[in-house]
Amino acid sequence: MSHVQRITVLGATGSIGLSTLDVVARHPDRYQVFALSGFSRLSELLALCIKHVPVFAVVPDEAAAGNLREGLRTAGLATEVLVGEAGLCQVAADPQVDAVMAAIVGAAGLKPTLAAVEAGKKVLLANKEALVMSGHLFMQAVRQSGAVLLPIDSEHNAIFQCLPGDFTRGLGQVGVRRILLTASGGPFRETPLGDLQNVTPEQACAHPNWSMGRKISVDSASMMNKGLELIEACWLFDAQPSQVEVVVHPQSVIHSLVDYIDGSVLAQLGNPDMRTPIAHALAWPERLASGVAPLDLFAVARLDFQAPDEQRFPCLRLARQAAQAGGSAPAVLNAANEIAVAAFLERRIRYPEIASMIEEVLNQEAVVALDGLEAVFAADGRARLLAEQWLSRQGR
Image 1 (tube, one colour):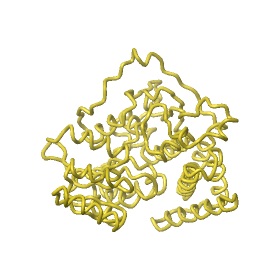
Image 2 (cartoon, rainbow, N blue to C red):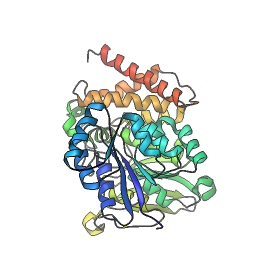
Image 3 (tube, rainbow, N blue to C red):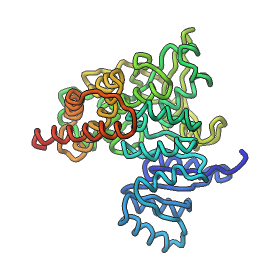
Image 4 (cartoon, one colour):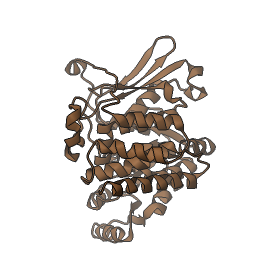
């Protein structure tokens, strides 16, 4: 490599951010932390700043900024503290930055991720909501800016590794028949349907294979995460929803597969550790050590597959419908899901009501074309209002 790459990590205190910093720290000759952002875990952000000594740190408001500045002064660090969305966009687009890890969860990650894209950065995309909300606009910006977009979700990274390098010519042109998107099935894969009414947030967040944040863990339990990934795959790989098939694979060893017209099926395997796709994207097109243990197939012993049960996972059905509808439907789906998951985590609604709320919002909100970011956020706002109204009607 010609120079040390400077990295901005948006969402540094989350599981993806921490895994990124672990990989970066293993290769100080190749990578240097330029900026870190955090939202609520500000003491952890301070500790990360002390360890990695970034040029900038970004926090949500002035109160948090004052506390972080005091901590940095005490530690003798000159890290400059920025505030809010403007600060996130600044560190994403800074001319000194080579690569941006976009790992802010939810709609809040869209503008800073798009700022990195518009600045032509190497963008490591872990924020799937950015593509779900604004897929056409986002991919158009990638093409216009010349940004390098590399997927970090283990499934999309696996697909990227299994596709030929010229897949942007079109899946049909490169002989691809289907994309097979694997899903673990989460903690409720075999729970009796009648028992789902009583599951707790703690149970929903206890993923059997992956260590993730609370929101993403609930999405995994409901398989909304897989639905959002289906929409994301359509934009990343220029696929139709009918070309993306979800396969439940409880071991989480095969991260996804690509089915070719000649009968070949290519799969990417590995231990369920996010440092693998992070290291792949950081070094692409090279490879580097991630710290992940080698896969022991003898310990795994077996690989199981089954079709997803849409009665058990109605969120997957709703996501596929939104993907097929296009326009504003995916943004509405995502916004309603964010409100529903937050309400479930706050114990205001029961687990099955997540899907009920989302379906009602989708049924109430007409699908419109999205011709700019204002239209995206307008659809997002309308969906959030409808979701809050649903909660009010239920007395929640």
